[in-house]
Image 1 (cartoon, rainbow, N blue to C red):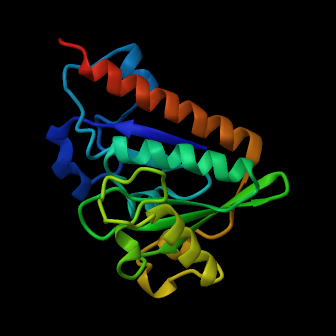
Image 2 (cartoon, one colour):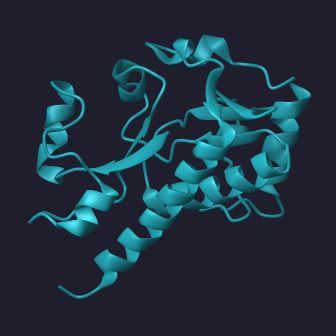
Length: 196
């Protein structure tokens, strides 16, 4: 349903020609048979099934792995509680937000848009890498999106992003996929911390 990919940083320029880079490899394969290169964990790729590769390309690289994983943990908790969940890209430019909504045995995935200030700086997780004194970013962000009826900020969506709307996933396999990527992401971080 969703899969992290890593690639050789020497292939950064290949994004202009091809998606995915030729060296792209999922985390499981990387851990099972580590290549000679070390991935840049600030530029991980996150691929979603059910949408075109062109749509996936429009929001990748997704960003910093250590900022994505806490969001996936929060996303899982909220969906299990029957609440909508948010996920944002973790890049240094203006982020893109996505929304996941539980509907019976399905989870619906849509692009939400680029949110206005200050919300675009907030993270939908208990701990945020962006510090704002006395601001509960998670609460402020969810309250803002809910007060706008989970509206899609369509005018901020470019390329193929408007096509990412109500993509249906069976919830149980989707949650299993989220769990797997969280586990693999943490395993990768530990693996790369070990002295070579």
